[in-house]
Image (cartoon, rainbow, N blue to C red):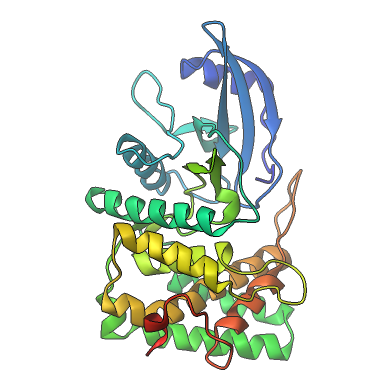
Length: 332
């Protein structure tokens, strides 16, 4: 992630020692996303090199963070490959660095796959279904903080920065999503803890298998269908070129078939999948507009292109060619 908070080596070393993770030997800022400060931390313990990730939280409060950290702990203890937060001698997994809340988690093995095949999409689909089922008995509750209420608050903030055509699309889609959210079918959708940001760069593969998923700091309780839609909008669309944002039906088919091999979709989920794919596109178009036009200073910062998710949204509209991955899901 971007580095907003410069962490002194000595302070990081003291935290690593307190967590019984050995002696810190290297602290390296991670360039990438835009929400939190992240460092790779390397330490020596019992003659072995150990690697973790230190996250300093820039927006989330100490009151919000236990949900994310304990969800990761819950998933890890139930066999889902996620980074497990390190605890101190008192069992605390939420710490402080430079006066801000922080956590240290395992560094996952493997590498991200930014050009996924059908096999990669199937592996992620099956894992997401397992994650949803395991999360059913997680007792903590916190809403998706980037859900519909945030969209309603944020659209007026970004409107001054975009042209008339973009503003019309943004207003129209927001109105549509408010309408969907009031429907009885939507209110009856299965829900529970979701990742809400499981993009290609938030999963790792090793020897063709998913070795881990990470960056749970947008997680919250929401519909499982929204989580599926977020994945379809990143794993199963084209990136770059003249067809940027267009769906890849074969990849969608692989993802959905594998997901349903673990947890079949309900009839209502099938009907509302197109609406949730639009919702997922709106959410990330809106957040990228916000991050681009209202940025925070950071030592390393790469704003993502909002136009990509505008194109994803347009490709999901009724007058656009519909993906053929799940024909029954396209019937309203």
